[in-house]
Structures are given as structure tokens and as C-alpha cells.
Image (cartoon, rainbow, N blue to C red; front, side):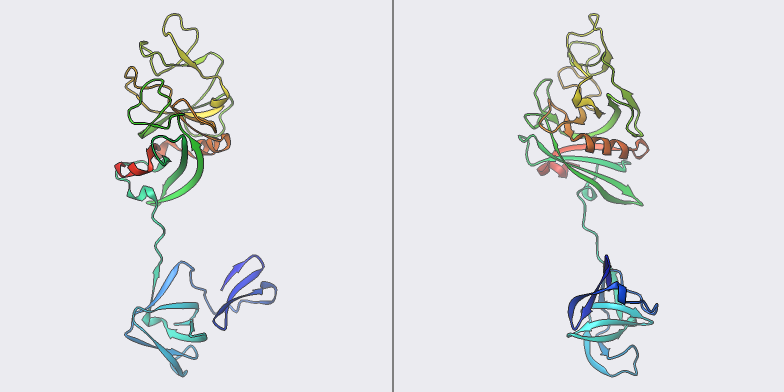
Length: 299
């Protein structure tokens, strides 16, 4: 028997019924089984009795491997539904086995190392700008899914080989860098930097400061740089792509606010960005994986 709001879900003459909890009182003598448990007969043949004891008459039998619809447990006896009737079987010959939880995509990943938080960004193929964003966290040695949201990629989708200005988002697994925003820290545990009107990200491949956060004026240090003080960067974090700062390989790759498309970053709604920022914990070595669904076996 389970409860939903002010109603109890019950088995009634072999059917499912509901009764008001206002007129039902627990006797304290029975323990309802966990809903996630399957009960299986272990004896070659097990009598089903009309009451909880061997002194009650047998109303039939069940065989080894048969699954039982258990209503409750009373002492060493399980109350079950048997051919539309109420019956009892000895718990000595019934085994409870927990139903396996659905397998998560991160359970099959082999490259996560000591990461205990994962942001997974997937798309149906290389050419779409639409993405699915999922977050996962390892708790007590098991992966749990935390969030699912819609997102967007670069205008031309994922990149086979990322290049500066190609309007494509890089695939791969990356660590997570500094969080940023045009407002005060929203509550993230990541290092946080508040954007000012002078902040830029250098995208000039010929500059020695290529793919770094700098402040104006340029004073000849770069020929081009991206302005950071824009609504898309109300909140976000740096994806640690091209940390070697290889000229022409791509720069200013962020996770930020946006719902249309990006120039090569990954974006989602401001609400989801803030939620993810608050969730991220550098002590859990978070990573972000970006990939078409068909290539997730790489990870």
C-alpha cells in the first residue's frame, strides 16, 4: 500500500483501488515493502496459505523463479495477491532483489579520472546548433543526474577541427576555468571575476596575449579582442579550451547566457547558467564534455 496526498493506493480483489487516508489507521504490525524491490520464489514449490502461518489451509502454490505481487510483510510471512485472492507465503523461501537503477550515459565513460561532476553537452550531429545540456554528480560512488536543459552551440554547430572565427563549438573534454559575470557573484564556488567595461578577451592570433583575458587599452598589444561587457556574459564560465594558446586554433570559448546561437561557445538560459554555477564545486574536479551523440563512446 502506498500513499499519494490524502489517499492510499490499495489492492482490492486483485485490482488497484484508492481509499481516503482520513479513515484508515496503521496497526503497526505490517511493513510495506519497498516499491523498488522485486520478490522471487526460491523454493522449487511453495505453498500459498490463507493466513500467516502453517496452520492455515493451502490455497495453491507458486514455483521457483516466479515473481510475487507482495502487499506487505507480517512477521515471517508475506501477504501477496494470488489469482485475485489474498494469500500468504513464508519469507524463508522468497528472495527480495533490488531493481537496478537505469544506467546513465556517464556510467559508461572511461576518461573521467577523478572528476565527480560532469557537464555533458550533446547534439544530434555536427551541423546543428541545438544542444542538450545535462549535469551529473558522483555521490557515494554512484553517478546521479542533476539537471537537463536545452542549449545552443556555435552558429555552424560542432567543429571537426576548431579554427578561429569558424562559428563552431569545439568537441572534447575540458576542465572548467574562471566563472565570470557583469554582476556580483551569484553563489558559485568557482573563482569569480566581475566584468568591467575595460575587459576584453584577445582573439588576435598574432598577439602574444592570444586567448587571454586582458584590459583595454590595447596599446599595440593586440589588433583585435572581444568585448566582455555584453549581455551574453551576464554570467558564465571559461571552458579551458586551447590552453596552449596555439595561434588560430580558437579563443574565448565560454559557457554563457544565450538561446539562439553563439560564435563558438555553449549557451543556455540565464536561469540555467546560474543554477550550474551554484552547483559547480572545484573540489569535485568538474569537467565539461561536448560531443555529437554518435561519438560519446570516445569518452
